Length: 225
Ligand SMILES: [Zn+2]
Image (cartoon, rainbow, N blue to C red; front, side, top):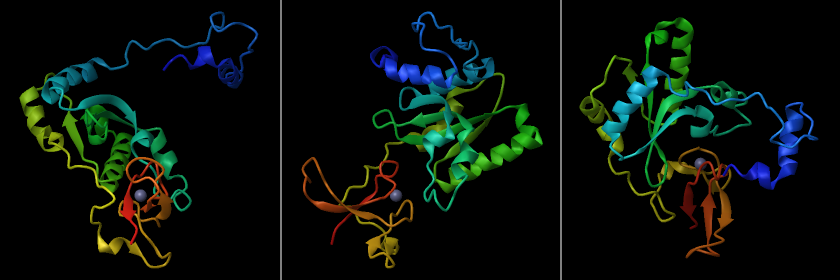
């Protein structure tokens, strides 16, 4: 991580060209106009982060400022053009992820007074709808001068309980997921037709299974037969 530019000058050259900067100068001579922000988290966000950190108590990873397009994907991109664009400029204030798998568990929005503005309300409504559609919980916490970690912990407790083990190929899946049109099962998560795959590694190597066409964004599988 972070060493790509040193190991791959071709890649850096491409980046510099994109930025309209010549590649004659060495990277250290090239003064790109970037600096580290001192306000990565605002004072209000930092105050909340500290309470959240105490409330979570290492039971999950806290990721601040996560782009919605990194959390969600568009199930049928051809039929839903523009859907990704609607979320790609939007962030959730905090995302709690499973410590082991980094699977997203719950989003948290810190609602300050700006959330009363109508433009902000429109944005909030879209964010709420995206979380609902994808069945990921979203908590809205009103911004305050201080927070009780105990109160926060109780609000989060339902979302931090041990997650159910991931579905395996042998797990029973809903019968209504069958898609008669294609003769292939439909993905229970996406609704799109699955495709026949062959496992290339692990104990199941060589065995066929149905896999979602949205892999790797969706890792749903079904057994054959
Ligand atoms: Zn799927």
